[in-house]
Image 1: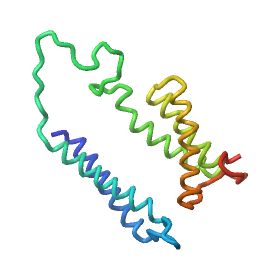
Image 2 (image 1 turned 90 degrees about the horizontal axis):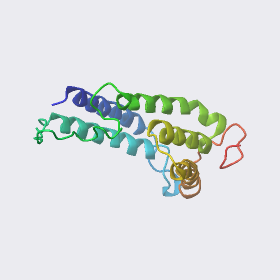
Image 3 (image 1 turned 45 degrees about the horizontal axis):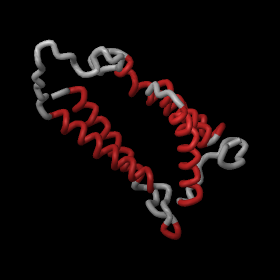
Length: 171
């Protein structure tokens, strides 16, 4: 049993329950059956509760003992990959991601959803996950634009377009 994971799971579930309680005060569906202002908060807070409980439950199981041959190299050893065995960079990733999300909140009203989303995805992919190449760059551009179009056109949910309010690019 990993006490830190059980605690994290409970904390996430409690935060999700608090968010769900607030989200239930908003309309789940709007006029004409389109998603209302409470639609995504209810779904996301429910997901937080479920995932927190799953993390806590999985952490309660006893650790499985893995038998290795003498001289066997542990997974990830010598590969240059970050492992979760010490206080290295992989331990800081959740905190870095949280700080990035918090930093994006004020940017939404200034530069809009698409530019903020592209910047967030680029930093997450290139700096946090250390991905390289054209695929992460393409994802950092295409995903925010596609999400913007999905929300505004298909779901009729307005997203921030920035202080100039000129559409998909937020310029």
